[in-house]
Length: 224
Image 1: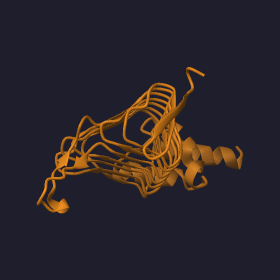
Image 2 (image 1 turned 90 degrees about the vertical axis):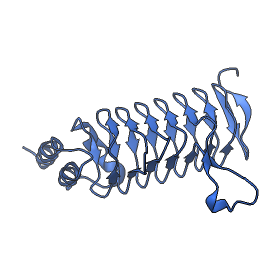
Image 3 (image 1 turned 180 degrees about the vertical axis):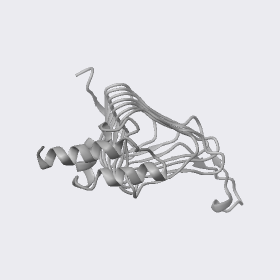
Image 4 (image 1 turned 30 degrees about the horizontal axis):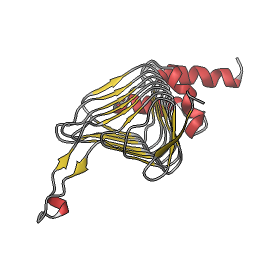
């Protein structure tokens, strides 16, 4: 057997025990000893049905629903605040380095099959849900906030209650460029594209190409 074959056999053995818990993440660490870091460890996710969870990931959540072959890279955070709802990750979802997902009271997160979230994105689901469809490509440094602070006069901002007007829905096959921010109440239709640095404050129709602060639809991929 070749050295490469020995390395694959080693990885496959340890990936039998993979998972988001401490033991599962330790097994992933052993599986990855002979694999390059970062994107180089994505192939490990298909070696174990529970997927690959980096030893440096922080998983503090009691209600995670996992599809098969999920990849959670270095320093990924999945956190449950008080009364936080479920985090549902579909099959072949990729969460790359530094992605943070947190749920609090009234919030939940659902991410569909084959959606890829690049480094340092944040999904903070309080009061409202974040629903991301299948095959969505999300570039680095994107943020999703399905809530806002109230603006009652005479009340310090630190004491303003959180409020939501419907959460965030992103349909299948959407592409979000680097640094996109998606705010509460937004619905982005399937096949839409949002340009880098845009702030999405209102709905984008299916196939829409939107850019700017706030984001405006400038073309439509479907109607060209």
